[in-house]
Amino acid sequence: MRGRLVLAALLAATTVASVTACGGSSAQAFHPSGAVPTASLGDVPAAASRVVTAPGGFRFPSGVSVDYAPVPSGSATDRAVLAGYQGYVLSLWAAVLSHGHDTSYQQRTSGQAQAYVQHETAFFARGGRAVTGVIGYSATSVMGVYFGLGAAVSSCVNAAAFHVANARTGAVTGPVFPAGYARYREEVAEARRGDGGWYVTDVQSFPASTSQGAMCR
Image 1 (cartoon, rainbow, N blue to C red):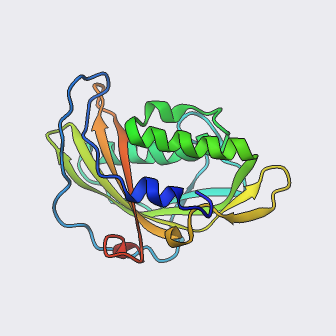
Image 2 (image 1 turned 120 degrees about the horizontal axis):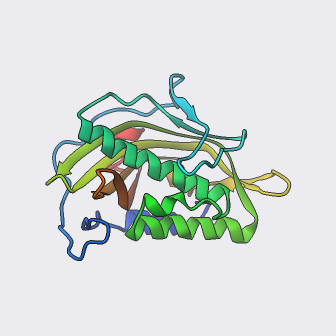
């Protein structure tokens, strides 16, 4: 986040992680395959709904909007996987905006994904920084479910109107993400918990200017 290359290096350089059930001692590697859905993000759709409350109860301030375009319904498994992704997204921003006081991400992430949330939360907490503006997620879809234990999700993210602000004065100091990531495709790996819920283990990011992120232009 912010105008630095840390996000690009952290996300773009990672690969989809091996999936391990919570508390498990063995990992089963999987590799997303099949066609990536074709769609265009454009501006955040007018039909997108603003999420007011994160899973842990954190209420997003009036100056921050996390928007989701309607997601077509699929199988029960697909809906559960998408709920796991949405929980990750909301708990990420809840942790960042609360400067780490909201810890609901700990139940919705592990591995690289959890390390990323902690890294960004620490950055904002140290510098007395806040977030303001709108971030939109659309064209969210399940790329595949693997052996009932792992899954991959793709989503188009529009962060062009999402900014870093001074937490005390509210003054905008720059973009949340590096310039090349104003619009990008996010791809996450998920693992299934014993209770049937899903959590995110790994995150990749592809700028819309690249072939891998082109569907999100």
